[in-house]
Image 1 (cartoon, rainbow, N blue to C red):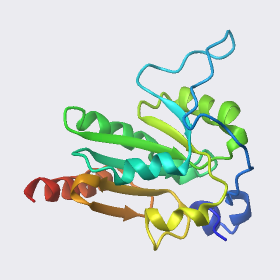
Image 2 (image 1 turned 90 degrees about the horizontal axis):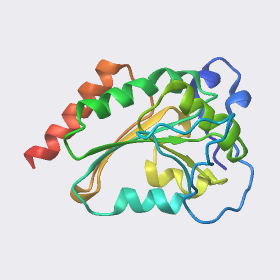
Image 3 (image 1 turned 120 degrees about the vertical axis):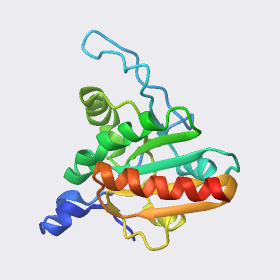
Length: 193
């Protein structure tokens, strides 16, 4: 059985606090809209989309042959290194806004925390990248498809170009320079093939 663990929590010896075992919740349709804005819940910025999706939706994105390069970051609001690196992904998206590059932040928070924790978190930080919460309760069914060597520790990032069947996985926290350098190497290799 796999558990997603915040690597920072694990290193501090508090792995249970960061262990991720989501509650079961049946939802339909596959991608749920963001709740409507109310007096106490302002609308999400136009640039950020927050959705709850199944593994099957993410699997299709990873495997559908097209000419888009995806940077997919797996994170959680309870993971300190994850939170620290999130702004770097927005900066990377800005740097590549005119290329076929798409940043996707996949939250591994508990399903029950979608409305009360994840959505407010994204709004408060002004994240501009697309955010999906993965509504799967059994990481063992999909984690190896991201990368067979992934232990489930967060943060984790994968660069994917489905059309060229290229993928590069990282199970670490990035600073901005590292993220930009690693992505540039990946992206240049795609454009020289």
